Image 1 (cartoon, helix red, strand yellow):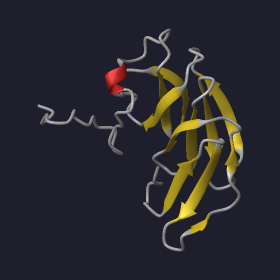
Image 2 (cartoon, helix red, strand yellow; image 1 turned 90 degrees about the horizontal axis):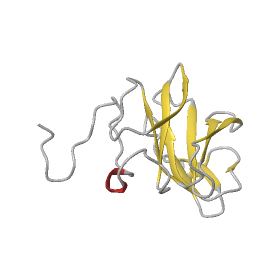
Image 3 (cartoon, helix red, strand yellow; image 1 turned 90 degrees about the vertical axis):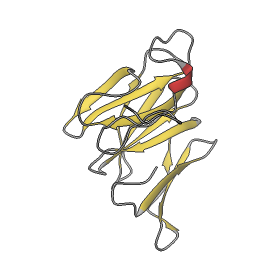
Length: 145
């Protein structure tokens, strides 16, 4: 995931480490974020102050302070299944509709899960992101009209 100004890239590995990279210097930014779980998805809040990391093991989303790299809190989806996609939506709308996880001044953090117990969204749409403005992105081959 890229931060809002496009200068920092957040990338996760299979061991649960999230690294932030300065794209101009090609060097890490601070210490890695250690989630201790597989991370399927990362997303920046629109103001760039918070980074969400979707857990691929136990259905949680870690909310991290992007500057200090401190864990703000962990939010449970209630499904127990892996979180396949996280997105921040300032308008309280998201496509596809998914379970609401948390709210603060930067908008809502929401996540999808592939768990069969989840009624969040069809599997076909799980990884579909929203645009930075909160607008929906149409499926491939569609004009969105």
